[in-house]
Image (tube, rainbow, N blue to C red):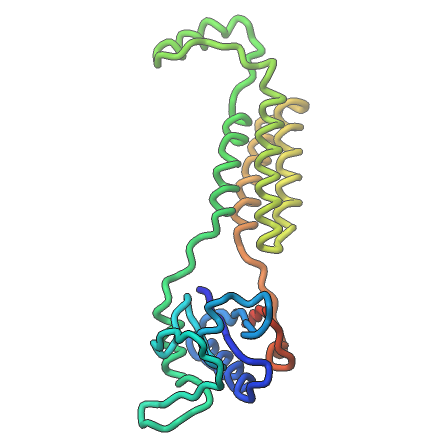
Length: 247
């Protein structure tokens, strides 16, 4: 989900709003991560200038249900269920907004890496047609399903290497997004095993082991790397754009 805190640099209610966010994330069990926008900063989006300070948005919607107002540029106060004024949104409203937000969609790079690994796995599983006496048998099998026999053995090595390279490039992009470069290292090792097992050692065990490692690397790389923090740096100093993740 996309959680945003909009504030003015001189607003005295920003620190309580950050503390409220941490409390809401802790109470709901949602991973604490949000983005902050200082309304007067040049890189802040235009919509941030339509809310008072502080304002908390979850997936673009105010947690209290208030609509944006053009030219809103003052400190903002909130009313709780009993009509009492507060410097921050009600905790229940923030928790409700966090829990009602739709779940995260799987990152696109996860499926891209998985799809990119399919051609490499398929090329690695193709048998090498090294026995001329077997050609008639291969031709008979292919003709039975309506395909023409083609001796692909001369291009099998560069084809497999090219498919592995594509899979590793997508895996590298995935690792860059998630921060898990161990999956990229595992993917390189998997590609090495596939090429060595199929074209050097001619061992099905080594080749199949490389395929298993490649698939494992794809799923391992799809997991976002998270770090535990003893304290929240956003509570110490504000910024125009901050992301905080805690457990």
